[in-house]
Length: 478
Length: 99
Ligand SMILES: [Zn+2]
Image (cartoon, rainbow over all chains, first blue to last red):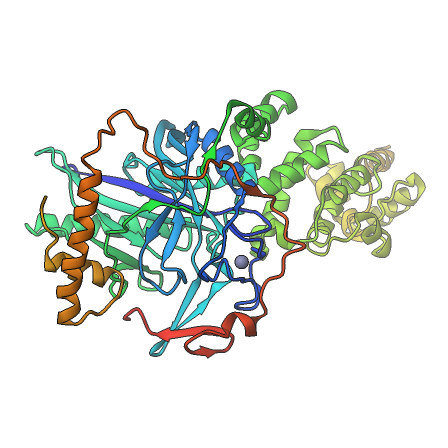
């Protein structure tokens, strides 16, 4: 690999979280029956007048600001002309020479090394319809046609599949924190098309760019780039030439393949969209949008460490999942021991999600349930063992810990006389262990504790039980 | 002023997915060249200190709020009424990608 350096640029498309489409007020709701969210505007009928969705413009400016971009004081839309049935009017309303944002950057960190990935442009356009190809026909659903779509283009600053994945993770998290995109790559609300070439370090020459499409996850982006680097390397080492082309990703075979059929003439004959007046962004409007930028991941991490006493690792695990960070903050607002909450969320809660292969959104769990359980623990109503035992049910069924404990009779035994009775029973039954203890084998006490816990199904208060057991054994020594 | 060639006319027709007869190619090459000549005349004007103009109506920032409750989308039947072919509530066209 030493002779060549992978050079990757990224084109990311993000569907914006608006209620309505870019130029008409049809709904953007995902998953509706085909062709139920269309109108003459998003079906491209002649004579209609598109009107720009203000929120989509503000979301785009907000994202550009968060990516440290220069914001255009004057921008307009452009028609990108091409013939393909996903676009009923044969042009896409997009932006060309005057994007809303340009010259930004996003910092990434791979194995402890920080690096800026420069952002070339951030612009706003409309999404296309969805095509399904079956047999000798292509089927079109125009529900997605006209959904606000933000395009983010990087400079070719990414040099490995790891950097590419890290960049996408960071960008997706940023978009989720800003509340402008849900970042669901499986549903296509976030799409990514990397282009890759190999730079020859000996002769200082650039390679030929290959674009990759159909990537349904961040993991797939990493795998596809890995594959493509090796493919290009083999061709170059055999003295061959890389063809400039668009390749698709086959998720089953884990390989890229040349995409034919969509003959794209890269001659879009762009011209300013005459039906939509230009966008002028003045200082006041920009300041107003800037004020709407919420706390971003890095700031949140800092606050969790400095303000709440979490370790850097704990804070990081919490912030890389926005729903987890929200759950944590909600619990902290009702219960003061942040560290304890973090522990339960990071190890126990996430452990359960991993085993069940569920996401946070898929379980009926909330902060109140966790706080309720922590209070039961503090009051001594349940032991830590019981807490760990009932937690999966709390998480997966959203059931109140108090109710589970009551229904299953798991209340901790804190009545000293009741415990003493059980201790005496066990001493009676386990004569051998008692004998050994009395001969000086201290470890036998652990066995006796275990027997008591088994008898009480873990409900005996541990410190109380330990004290009573020692008292009773001392009694026998005399 | 370089003349538009017949090949360029064929290329533009291809981009617009128009199939032209030989006579039409001839006719459009001639007509498009006359249009270009008219623009060449305009290009004689001194415009060095003039900002490019994209819109002739002095409007800016015409927006709609992101609010759809009063909006009437079409029914699926209405949307598909002009479809050349339809099936299962989809528009249908000949397959446009190869395997
Ligand atoms: Zn519409």
